[in-house]
Amino acid sequence: MSELLPCVEIETAPTPRATVIWLHGLGADGNDFVPVVPELGLPAGLAVRFLFPHAPYMPITCNNGHVMRAWYDIVYFDSIDRHADLGGVQASVEHVRALIASENARGIPSERIILAGFSQGGAIAYTAGLTHPEPLAGIVALSTYLPAPQLIDAASTQVNRNTPVFAAHGSHDPVVPVVLGETAAQTVSTLGNPVSWQTWPMQHSVCMPEIQAIGQFVSQRLG
Image 1 (tube, helix red, strand yellow):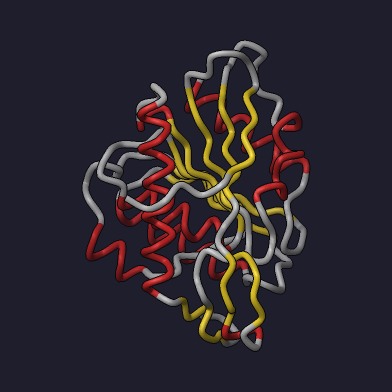
Image 2: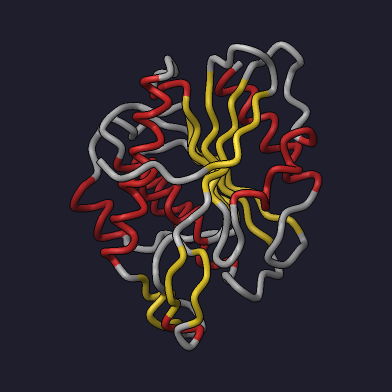
C-alpha cells in the first residue's frame, strides 16, 4: 500500500460518520480548498471529515521541468489534449486508495466516502473513483478531464457504475477547455454513472453558486 500523504484535516462536527477526500490542482496544496468547507452550507448535524492531501513534489515536463506539487507529470499538451504520465496517474490513484483504506480503518466505510478534486486533482478523483474496488458515495469533478481513459477501460470494475458524479466547469476556462470537461462527463455517463453536469460563466476557478451546488450534492449523498 502507498504511504499516506500528509493532509489538512477538518471535521464539521464530533465523531464524523463520513469523509470527503478533496484533491487540489497542479502547483497548489491541500490548503487550497480548506476555506470552501464552511461555504458548503452542510446541515449542522452532518458530521463529515474533510481530508485535503498534499500531492508530492515532482518536475513537470510541460513547465520546463519546474518542480511543484502535482498528482502526475504532464508531458505536453496541445489546444485540447493533456498528455499525462500514466505511471504518475496510477501512483496517485494508489495514494488515494491508501487514504480510503485509512478512513475505513477509522470506521468510515467506502460507501460513506466522496472523492472530490479540482483540475488535476479532479482527474485523479475521476480515475480513482471510477476504478475503486468498493462502492463510493460519490465523485466531485471540478474543471477537469479524464487523464487516461485507457486506465478506466482496463481497470474499472462494475462496483462504482452507479456512483453519482457531480461535474462542473467554467465556460470560459482557458486552462482546461470546457470541451474536455464535457467530454469526460459524457464518457462517464456512457459508462452508466448518473452525472450532473453544470457550467458557470467563469474561468479556471470555482464560484459561490458552484460551491453551494457541491454542498447540496454532499448533503444528499452523505446526509
